[in-house]
Picture 1: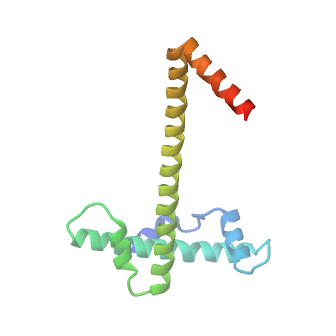
Picture 2: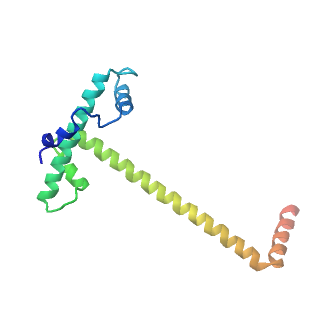
Picture 3: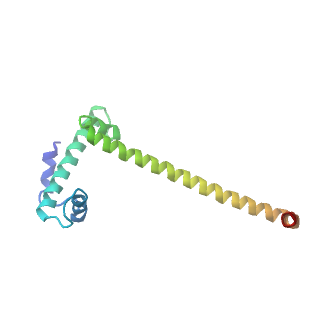
Length: 144
């Protein structure tokens, strides 16, 4: 289905919030309170762009014999515009870096908790001997 054919149901409606688009405009040099007409036009432009790219990516997926659209389909749809491809690639690289950092952080936290539990179990199993060892180490440390 052509993107223009689906755009009829969104005529007159804003697809993005006014605040989001106002912040986008402000980030690119506009004033803090842009005109309503400017925000409306930007909403139409962004919506048309997203619909066109999504439709093209859907066509690529359909041609490949898949029902689901993958990231590679969007890459192929935007292959002629290196600026868009660079931004998309940068965003996905950042996302992967954040996910790997989170995994590393979660694993380290779990290992620390396991180690603490194991040490606690060892001290409870040792009973009085464990406390004597600790006292002997303290005495040696104080004597030096």
